[in-house]
Image (tube, rainbow, N blue to C red; front, side, top):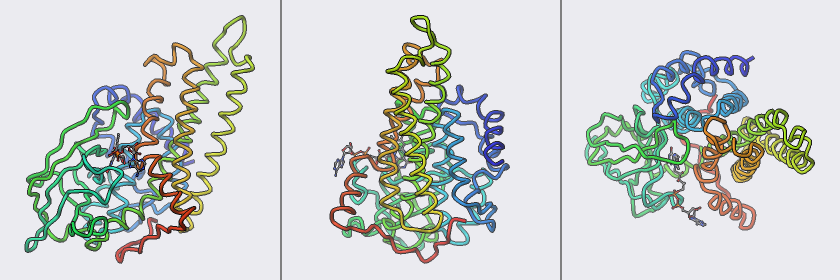
Length: 385
Ligand SMILES: Cc1cc2nc3c(=O)[nH]c(=O)nc-3n(C[C@H](O)[C@H](O)[C@H](O)COP(=O)(O)OP(=O)(O)OC[C@H]3O[C@@H](n4cnc5c(N)ncnc54)[C@H](O)[C@@H]3O)c2cc1C
């Protein structure tokens, strides 16, 4: 029922605007509030703050249906708000932050973004240069971030910065910064795909924020990030298997209609075998992603499995979408058909939220060296639902 309701909602309220938002790179504000009114941003968050407190499989449905409307950018804007920014508010935010930011975020009245990546520190998170210096009752933030989803139009920013630069990765803390704080500026970036979402480069020049805007404890930023990365990576894995499924469904419909040499192209054995392989791959990845979701939902430690899921599902999605585009011949290359957008949107999968190379490093360290990425539970942490 939830899937059907959300699918209908997207069809009626979102799909008519998607082409326009893909062109302008700006998602109209009203849709955020509509998502909020319907409770979609709150499915995984506590009822005390206006959420619905539902299990993670509702999130899976939310993500899968977003992929099926074929705008990686729109989907990213929604899930970056609901799961990247809001996850930190829920886990590390204190009561005031939850009331003033989490609740309006659930209502779609405030939009958030998560700012980790910097121009000279992407994969190497510990190498970030942004600093937060305590001066009396304030922190003064200086530095810059880049490639931030919702980085231009969001109302608040969840930002990592070094409170103790000499400690490297162990000196990172998390902060909440209002968009209209003096010294915050953002520039919109032009990009290959995810065109409906705004991706920003952000600068912080002597940005003064109250000490209460420190999220969780000082110098615990890195463990907090690690804590949330399992879900972030699983989200990207689920997105990948969902968009592959959508691509194959579309290609199958096309193959039935399209005739060559007097028959439907779905009768050529070489293409049939390709379909068989793709269908098998998609199903295997989807089931593995569901399995990891189930374990995460039970509160199990799934850093390794979520990392494996993202590594493999995003690779599989790129391969499947490449092959599905081929099934459409020249039409696959045309903007009028969905495959072109799917193709460019999918390419972000192996890059964002940890590149495939970095994921391999993590898996290798866990498998070969026995390293654990278990983060201490922050003092103020509460379960998502
Ligand atoms: C559209 C988009 C949206 C994004 N949204 C956000 C967001 O909302 N918030 C946010 O904080 N970030 C966001 N990112 C940033 C993203 O997470 C980074 O781009 C990513 O982590 C890689 O960092 P980088 O681009 O600096 O690449 P680099 O770290 O410079 O890597 C360059 C290449 O070197 C490889 N490499 C680096 N180190 C190693 C190593 N040790 N071993 C092997 N290979 C290595 C990488 O895998 C990559 O292939 C977004 C990026 C994009 C493109």
